[in-house]
Image (tube, rainbow, N blue to C red; front, side, top):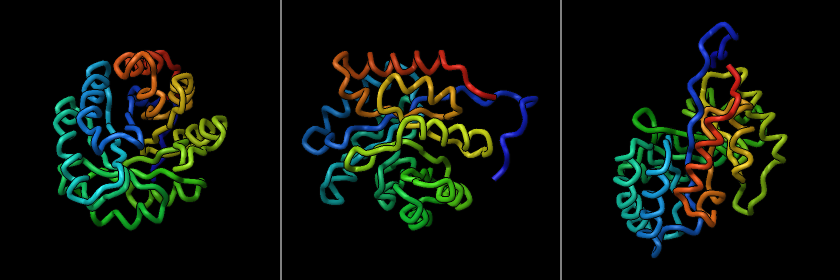
Length: 223
């Protein structure tokens, strides 16, 4: 993996938002999720939407992704599926996000070279570098696990800054609250992921995404 270079080179592109759907969305509420995504994507620039599918049979999961695809892709955002790399092509998704280096490596054959392969759940710097060397299109730091646990925010920003300073492969910093958006961008995240902090916002998805975009725009980012 190549270095980002030195301070005399052009500044990297401005960071963008990466939207993560709630874990309990979809299924019977698929229409409601589609409506909320349409509102969110209409409020600000969003680079990608990661869909976390509820438990269901394979056909049901494919149908849900196909129903969401026009809403997401017609706005210019990439549609990614959380896990289930084998469904991405069949459902017309742009790629998949895998949790952990082992799952990522196992999914590569189903995704590459046509689709995006992202990797999160990276507990160590070594695992992050392994993902990059294996062909990850991005790495993610700071996302909660299935039980809602995550590293301290200081640890997340430190990992983002380390990666941003050394590697060209983009990194995603996960913001558990809107107050974390600006510091993650300032640390060097190429994308800032927002999930429950947007979908649970009492103001609604559109207002929350617009707020996140405004915070992103004011961040002092590194070269």
